[in-house]
Image 1 (tube, rainbow, N blue to C red):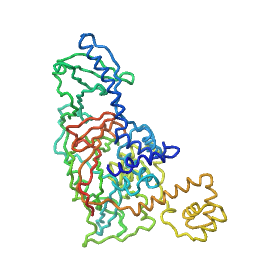
Image 2: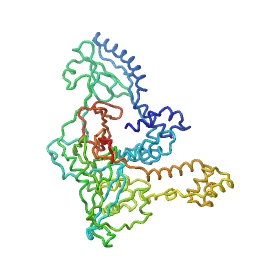
Image 3: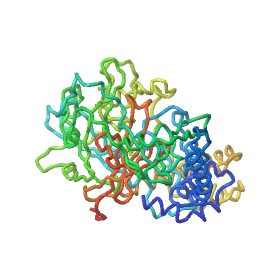
Image 4: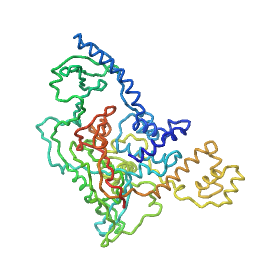
Length: 564
């Protein structure tokens, strides 16, 4: 993303020079390190020099084996790779989250949302970065409109909520090709990767070829893991090379044909937009419980749009399972059909019965309909747990929320009440200048500390004095925390959505291999120019046929710079 590159890479020198005493806890420092490592050749130049010497050594060994026709011997391959392991970044991002600080695998969507929010909070209070560039949450945030119609009175209510990910449901009823029961069991493996390379430092269970001297002879090098390193078993084998189905000097990835059901992407969009019925809904118009019809649209379309294909569901035994289906996601989208139109002239709106306190948007609120649906499933979870589940899936489908409950059943705070908005920072009060001067002179505190204390206590001088004295041991840290909260609140209220036309182009997607988000493996495909690449841990290769139908989380960029 060009804007984030500009923020960290272009100002890398200033950010790193002014790093705090503990850079391991500073997000700007760690983000800049990551940008320098990934977007520059700093680590490549020395690596190429080291590998050039190693290549000469290996070629000498291969030539000796070829000329003397001796038995293959084991030689340790000391080639290095450009492989960055952002352990400090992972530790920093997960430090404030009990689940993400563990070694257990988490859902990539939840992790992305947590990381984006953390980055945005830290960026707002950091003085070493360019504040004119929008935060990640601003670039991905969009507003969703919910239309709710009371079936008894026919009156409607419109409400909006903010999201970072657009979740599209998957329904097996939309499948247009069923799985053949007589065929082999379909594996959860996304694809079989076949690599052909000219380098001996390819890792893993793959077959590498290095053309040697005579064009008719090839050196077949089979690589395998050995005590944390690599062992190269050298053999001369013409037939194995000739019979190979892959070509030299090319990295490819080919999918294994399967007979999976296919669900058109358009069906997922239709499922998202279709109306749903809420049972046992308490109507504020009639005061009687009954049915309500609700539907969703998008009020704004962000510059970058993240789309999640909801492949996971709960079985009758309350176990999370995965829909083994293909969802062919187009690389170019036009989602104008999803744009919200707001209240219509012929609609009668319900009276707004929410109080000012209840209408505070500083924190997201769970959808009562979704919470009631979870409670009615008889799973034994408390109301607070169901509220947390509804928020975790952004008030999405009941199945997603139920799956979240099962996966987070061991969370210590699962049944705790939801945190309330900090009303102390909701609105900045106008301070009395004489009160500020009086506290500065009588208590000996600087003006900034006094002003923050008064704001925190709504202008009460007595409470402000008590607060200052009770926080003397960590006064600067407490002041910084409160100022950050005030800044976040102000920015949230004043931030503008990066709204624009609803046409997008795909630039990356993440695929999950496994039956549940609690285990398995993630790989990512990223488009650079016109070429797609696969990133699989420390393996990177060109992807000739990216598996667009098997993704879990897709990333799109708006196709035009125009905004509305």
